[in-house]
Amino acid sequence: MATPAYINRIATAVPPHDVHDKFLQYAPSLLHDERRRHMLGRMAQRAGIEHRYSVIEPDPDPERLDRAGLFERDAFPSTAARMALYERHAPDLAVAGVEALKLTEAERPTHVIVTTCTGLHAPGIDLEIVKRLGLDRGVERTVVGFMGCYAAINGLKLAHHIVRSEPSAKVLMVNIELCTLHMQETGDLESLLSFMIFADGCAACLISAEPEGVEMLGFDATVIPDSEDQITWHIRGQGFDMHLSGAVPATVARGLPEVMTGLRDRFGIEDFSLWAVHPGGRSVLDAVELSLSLPSDALGASREVLRRYGNMSSATVMFVLKALAEGSPPGRNGVAMAFGPGLTAETMVFRTAGENRAERRA
Image 1 (cartoon, rainbow, N blue to C red):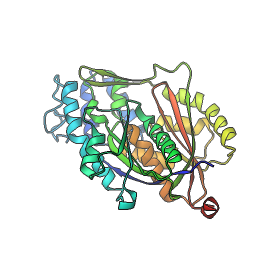
Image 2 (image 1 turned 30 degrees about the horizontal axis):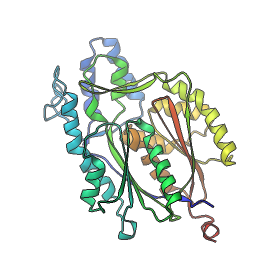
Image 3 (image 1 turned 180 degrees about the vertical axis):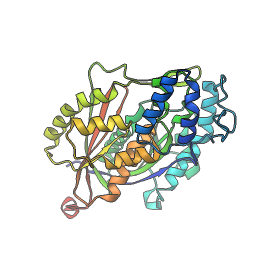
């Protein structure tokens, strides 16, 4: 029988600067059409977001975006400048997330997995984490790069394989994203609506064979047909250019019922009571709820994370999973899901640990 793998605990961290109100103040100035400005304001009211955090400090001057003058009107930073900011700030936030885990000596990581799609450099964050935490230089490192919002599920899948093949492994996964570095100066309403959602954040978790926390039962990945142009992420001269189509919620709604039928058949579970759904936006959560006929409170944890933090790409689903794991009794079955380029739905079936622990050890 294969060794079960568990997410023992999850910690989170965000930068100090709440930038949501600043963005709502500044963004309308990029639109020259009053009707579009009104639409942006109306969508902001309906977005379900109250706070988003960034490593960039906002400027109280309504004509300026940030105190350091990095995002000057008609002179937004180049990709090189944005990557320099990533290299400066991302390791600090990543280490803050890991330190919040409060790892003991017995939990010293043997493997490090990092997911990120908002920056890259070499030597990278994986080595920075190893160095700053004083880990063994031979620790096994893997970076899951540029997979977008569903990367955390892929990271968990990799950790699951590691623990099942090496039962003594202690896997540290870090999901670190600085999405706000990639805001563009644009008059395109759909792009501005995307920037209104994204934020910076970090999640860190420990995965091992120790039966505590959340047991990972299995994974599934589905690419929804005819949707590859709906979520794209390209490196351009002025940062990473993200496109998030307004058709995404309808596509998610179209593809999910078949995904859930497959999961129920494969795992023999009919009753999923925990839903760790990546809050890609309020309309995405509404689409998931409606298409799966979920109770109105089923996505409460996802909506709360969206309200408090926005969409932090790969880190976000881990914020949701943390809230559910800490607030649920043992033996509850759940599904974690996140969406990204493809359009891909990555899912994980899990169970809160504790119940039947004696039976597992027998």
